[in-house]
Length: 381
View 1 (cartoon, rainbow, N blue to C red):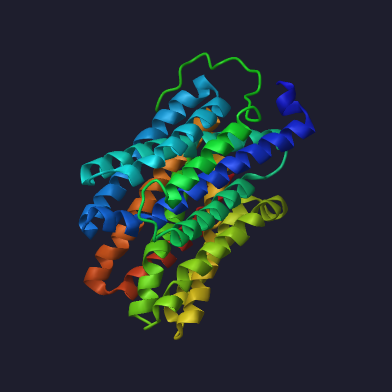
View 2: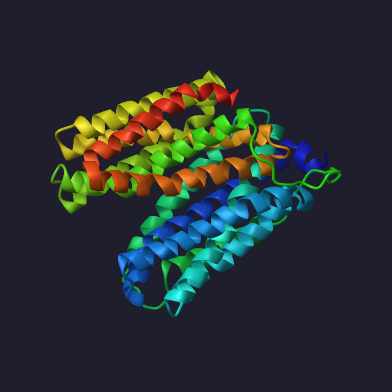
């Protein structure tokens, strides 16, 4: 192992550098989400057409994740992170410059492709840094991502009136990301180690890994469903005004940041399995509180408890999957692919059930998912 990994100063430097990559990735995803109304209005898209662009983003991410899991160990996970971060930064320019609907789908696909590669490689790198650090620090990386997501969304809201695609939140974040890649390029280094003797290949998860995949899929299912449906529930079922309806997701997101900032301490004190178990219980209680509270503000607090509960599920599962895989990147790719499936399925499933049984009834599914997360927490071991 080289001095980059052995020196305490170097360990702090590579941790800070990868945290900056997580932060900038969150900035990009937040700006992308906040730019949806502007892209829809500029290209005169229907809701259905916009959903196809979102599907293009997801398809690119799901396609690139297993590929990155196979290639990153050969290339070096730090090198893969550097190139993926640069590609993601450049891809951020695409959606804003798309002249028509077809170009937007292509740009969204490329953005998803680069985001999936970055997601796997930076989490694989974070797992190696955590191992060299000698203690749980995975949640701090995901806290940086969550802070970046809030910042990107706020920047997108502030620049929503800009008509020029060159002067937009996504273009500004792209420039920030390019600068961040330049600043971290030399700090992100792979330990001196020979490449694997056997070329990495895609393998189906074994029984133990299936529990990890199921847990992260359910965690992201809850996260995606609350993100897409909490404001709708507060507005339609509890008659909250628009400003208060948005509080559901705002409190949820803020609670996730708080949970991840304290997640490493909690894992060090109580262990990964107990943290996931308590998180699942807290999420189930939060959903029950949100759906039984008579007032929108009380319901928003319930959604906040859900955010606190699920905040550390993804970083803990990624850390466990990195240890369980043939390489950290391969393990993360396996878990991330399952997680994206849950993130995509959750909002759609809730919407389908809401059409048949009502939104309040369908959201109880999230409480069941949280209970399953609590019951499968031992798989973290």
